[in-house]
Image (cartoon, rainbow, N blue to C red; front, side, top):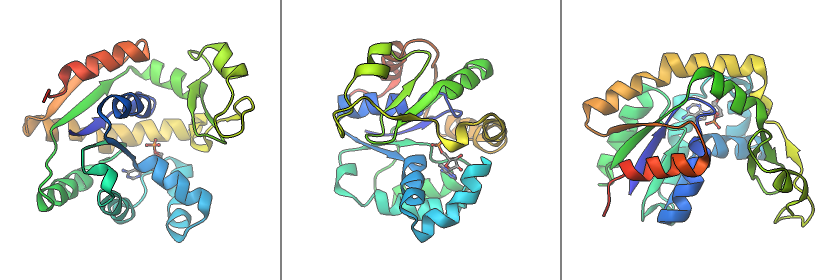
Length: 219
Ligand code: AMP
């Protein structure tokens, strides 16, 4: 199964991707995660991406497309993949179609996660990531046993939770604006291809996961 999850920052693309990859055993491909790893390692690609990321703007298409091309060559994507945070604009969507056509692996579905603006802002404000294992939690919805007592699988100690540097108020406003301007047009692009499904992505993670699975093609 090859799918794209489309949605604004905070709509739950990462959370739902993790649910899907456990269920379908397919790879999660998150350009945001790949870029953050490159920034953390200080690679030339990370250095080139950092300014745009911290300002909440999109990183250059060439950088992101190069990363995707390489990632889709890795064997864990052979059984299928979930694209999380890619494509983000029309040029990326067209390039993706071309790439998938070349390798004979077209998309099966695109799912838009719908969440209203106030809820997006609330989710992003509460989002925290463990610096050691990368687990993403939300201060408002994750049970306090997990937040305070669950041992981190990497350290065996409680998670060390930090806020993403681009989850601050000013940057979030810019990321939402960029979503509306550049990413939202992809809804029509994929609807015209007959691939689009839109689901209500508010409420409990498990409920959203059920709605998502209900619209995915069954083998
Ligand atoms: P995300 O984790 O998906 O919210 O992405 C975090 C940041 O990484 C974005 O605000 C962009 O600066 C950058 N980024 C992630 N994916 C893309 C993409 N497909 N194209 C351009 N920039 C991206």
